[in-house]
Length: 212
Image 1 (cartoon, rainbow, N blue to C red):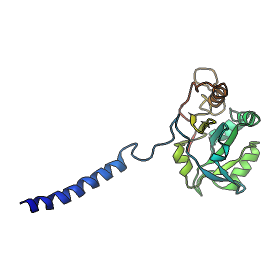
Image 2 (tube, helix red, strand yellow):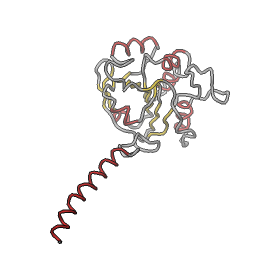
Image 3 (cartoon, one colour):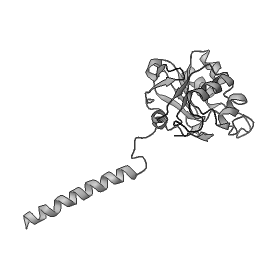
Image 4 (tube, rainbow, N blue to C red):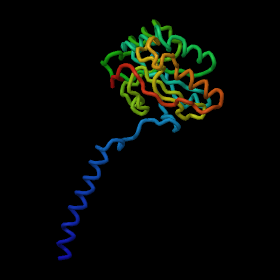
């Protein structure tokens, strides 16, 4: 009888282990979660459009802004030609802030490829680098869902803001929610520079979906 129970118990234990594995894979949040505000920003190493290696760890001790980018996205074009991204990057890079655009579009998808991104960077007069993340690992680590999608990292390496560039979902700055344009990245960097907690640390990004 005891021998028979052990024979039944073994397949049952295998069944429950398999069930637990499947549930873990299917339940929301079971996979590694996207970067959270207040947590250490995920490290990464990517190449820019000229093949130069860029590592986030090289900028420890500086404020870093990550801008998810797609040159073919109308919201990105609007923000870089009429909206908040026309001047914000230059304003802060002139003050020593590191600003990195990241394109997580897979090869062959809309807005992918070094040549297309280089032409857009020149057209938008971008002085900051565009990094290519064609396998999407960095974008997924941060939970980047849209272009543009903004992330601000503090000098201690912690993520202090994530979300939209501003509160005008047309990308042009012409339809601010509440009637007054608020540049969330500008406000976040202002709070960080003043040694204050970021007042608005998490907003919903708008724009095109990231083309993973």
